[in-house]
Length: 249
Image (tube, rainbow, N blue to C red; front, side, top):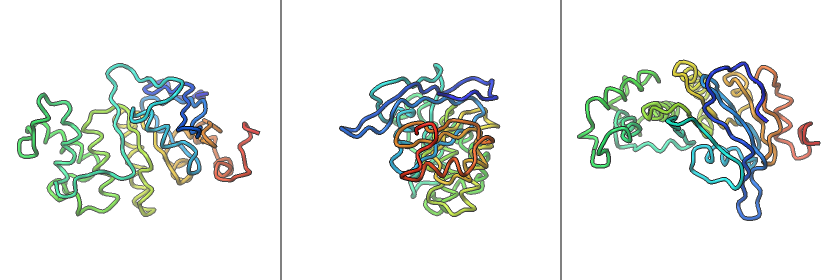
């Protein structure tokens, strides 16, 4: 069940008792969690524990068999993928503008040459927030991996989403870039008053940058608690075949 937190802000995500099977493979079992405005939540667990499936269900990209996922009316959700899915030949600005197209009437007929000035200005503001305004007119494919993840964050901001779901945003990055991306997500979560749920592979990053940590073990919630009450020993049990967490023994 969701843990009691110090967050008294609006709850933006509520996942209640969701389960998911792919054929005979039970991927998720009775998962529940919350995320509030200004809160950054880490999902941790071994490969195959159901982290990415849970995130995709929250994003509406996969269905669930039982349970419920709810967000308040009018709250938008943006997904940041492990592979950033930028258009490498287009400029950084064009890629960020793509995040805001859905807010523009007749957007399907628009091309980068006809993007309205208001959209470009909004996209530039998003690039300023991630520290890449000076790269706006560079081709996206010319950027480093860490910079491309920052562009993906800016694109999510341009969607005007109040919920950011990040699937392994640091997995392909060197340690310095990984810390920079996690710090960016944390700062945006607080400054933009959004909720962020991130699948994270490095426990140290989760503990350093996230407010809450949720551990998944074989598709079940092993723990759901503030990062300040979580240690590396607790997390390490998620990655052992015979080290089932205490609440599942």
